[in-house]
Length: 117
Image 1 (spheres, rainbow, N blue to C red):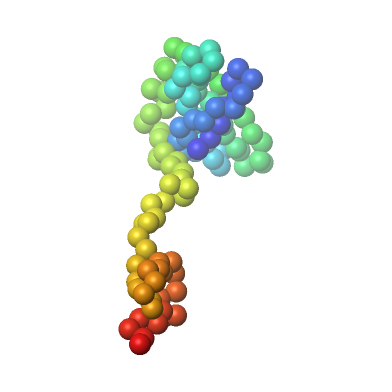
Image 2: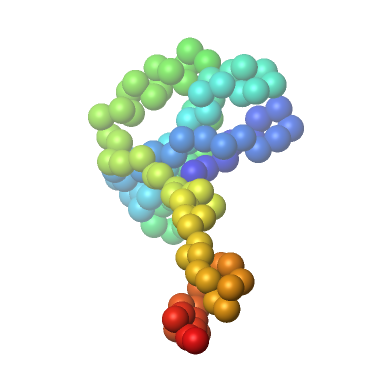
């Protein structure tokens, strides 16, 4: 996921990888659907050539929409970043009774003394 600097802040964007053309090694297209401050539609194309020079093209509003429609056919894939902080984990604990005291087993089941008299 890329970022575009607009209205004094960095805003998260959708990032697409494009098929590189001519002398370029990598092409990346960032799209900001709507800036939260100025409400502009922003498209930024970043290209890297063989001698590691970076060139950027940045357009807004209607010109940006036309530019994106023009480049839609060259899109290879959209970069998706998986958010590992939202991994589901269970809240199940094994309840057991040891010597008449009800306890919870959090991880180490091998240390339990179940059925001991």
